[in-house]
Amino acid sequence: MSGALVTGGARGVGAAVARALAGAGLRVAVHARADVAAAEAVVKALPGDGHAVVSGDLADPEAVAAFVAEAVAALGDVDVLVNNAGIYTEHPLPTTSYAEWIAEWRRTTDVNVLGVANTTWCFVDHLRARSRGPEGARIITVGSRGAYRGEPTAPAYGASKAAVHSLTQSLAVSLAPLGVAVTAVAPGFVDTDMTSDILAGERGDAIRAQSPFNRVATPDDVASAVAWLATPGAGWASGAVIDLNGASHLR
Ligand code: NAP
Image (tube, rainbow, N blue to C red; front, side, top):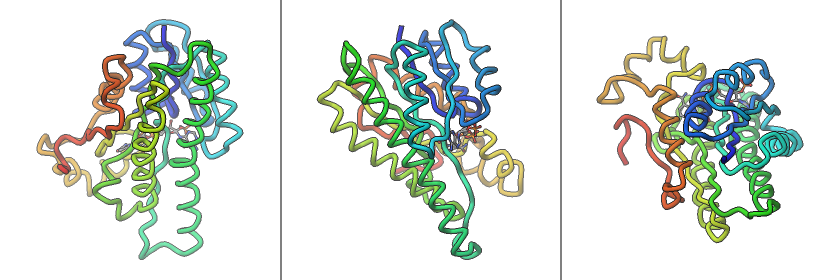
């Protein structure tokens, strides 16, 4: 049975992805930054057995190496990496001091870009070391519609998601000779802790109206696409960044 590591799996999109992958028969290592109790609650509710909890800050390269190794040790093997964890913070240029601007860019880049790059490196290192080799593995990263549409109040976030889309395309080519398929999804707004204040506030109705379905995504809308990308039949999607935005942004 295959194993999957889902970063930021203790809530939101990541928890839905963990449920979808476990429902498809995979053993899942649910990663949390620090809230191990929340990750344990997610694991407890997953179908099947053999799941695990791992933890560590994505911004810390040593912690990343440690939690990828923990996931491999706990599951015995990991075939699927879902780079889901990420942060979104608002720092519109006209009202942000230079010190805040520098700090926001640094933190967002550390987590959303370097965290994804480092987790991916450690995962591929595991694939190359295992006896049956990397063939058939999957790397799926949660990007964002914001990479295309812009994020005027969170420009570091938008740039970080454009970076991981580009990383996906680079790795789809460089890892193809190893038999590894690399994809990303680019959701529009999803109803999670990340967006609950925005969606409940005065901008909420306008955001829902961006989609002709007049709603935002549920975490399950994203998880079902990620679960499909993890299936053996989806390997030819490698290199794709799949829009999941309810026709709110066509390109
Ligand atoms: P969320 O509810 O805020 O969850 C974010 C997850 O990331 C949490 O599990 C969190 O863990 C983890 N995380 C944050 N910083 C971390 C760090 N430094 N190290 C390790 N883990 C960290 O967000 P979400 O909406 O589910 O977002 C999941 C992904 O979807 C993100 O990549 C986000 O950018 C993307 N996305 C979201 C939306 C949206 O509208 N919600 C739209 C497009 C794309 P802790 O709880 O332990 O901090």
